[in-house]
Length: 387
Ligand SMILES: *Cc1c(COP(=O)(O)O)cnc(C)c1O
Image (cartoon, rainbow, N blue to C red; front, side):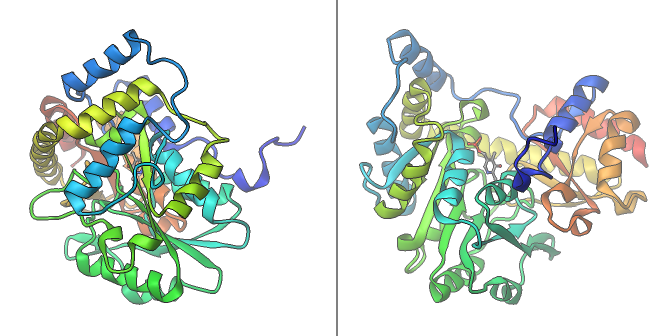
């Protein structure tokens, strides 16, 4: 029998994260590839989940999510950003941000539609757009002044008669960029002028460093009415395995997302939802400590990578550093990432996997710093062997 996989999903075989994590296990290398923290979220939040399981919260929660969590999300949007959403009709709970993004893309884009996204793109975007039968149109983020940013003219030129929406990830994984208000204004202008939907992935909304400020696109003039925002518990509270996320936006948009999502997973685990509602209301102080600690880890990893001979980009948010491999005499990040576990006992992700045109990302590899200090120290000592 021929490959049973539907044609539009061919080319999305095994993710690089699976390949690299398997390599880490085989070789005993330190895994700075996949971005999951090696320390748990706040203890009281974990207790709420355990208590919810022990006290009978184990059957289907409501499809749109537990009212307590939808209310907590609405309060968080209001208190932090001044964005007002009706918890009954404008907040919807999903299986992580991943499902929120997938359900939104499937709800708004179909065959013949184009979806603009900034490249490098988080790995689920291209696959999800393909699943929808739509086409991803990349706009390149280029290194400029120590950070990755886009050329406004290239964004404008990417819009055509079939453009349906723009997918915006800020703070950006894997580039580490936090879009400035001025950059967001350019995106908002394009959306308003061409009547596009904006889909924003804000899973790192709390993890910004130095003076970078996370500005939700929905807070800009005329944008709330056309923006669907996705976030989740995983990165903010260091529980990436909980896969509990949310979509916020105008009621008709949220209803469209619901129409798709209800037949994919229907609902997500009640105990995680209860604990997430608790965390959003009571553990933001813990998140601020996490943010500070991550900023220190970022600096620790960067100092070590620079000493080992890489040139680095200091991320303004997320927990990833982009490192340029050319000063060490390498040209292809994929080749280096595959050799790195043997050469140096460390796993990194080749940035080129996040591009439609891999050559733009070839000189870079991505290292995660959401790891304990001693793990980072050991990794950079090993990497020092490269030069
Ligand atoms: C981790 C991550 C996600 C996935 O979030 P989940 O809540 O685990 O599904 C989505 N977008 C970006 C940019 C991420 O880094």
